[in-house]
Length: 159
Picture 1 (spheres, rainbow, N blue to C red):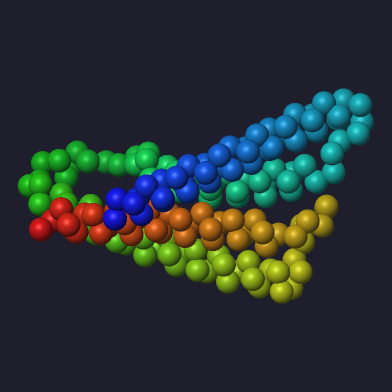
Picture 2: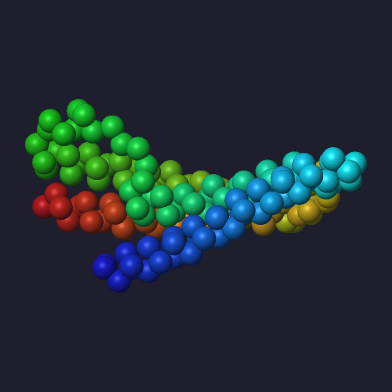
């Protein structure tokens, strides 16, 4: 189990670097577009590119944030409960979260395949949209795996 956790941490770290690259790309294209607008030569499709790169940035960074326990939690009520109850609540949250993220990953993958089948493209630059929806599926699937391993660890703590 420890080996799987290490592999998931390494994978989420790699995806976090891809998310950073997507955000850097968004920043560079936006800055270039602003400068080129001064010379009346804006970059066509900047809005589309930034929006599509945003999906990559968010969905790939989500796994790293989950692996590092970087999400906000409100514990003022659960901290007053017995430790076993806290573990049960944590396990329930991880179970339902992993279930939700698994469903989102599955449905996003199906949607990406449908977009590929219908050759859906963006409006201005006609870039295929399905790879970006697939990035959502991949990011959510990685979060699903991280939450599922956390759920398993929480079950072991309850005993």
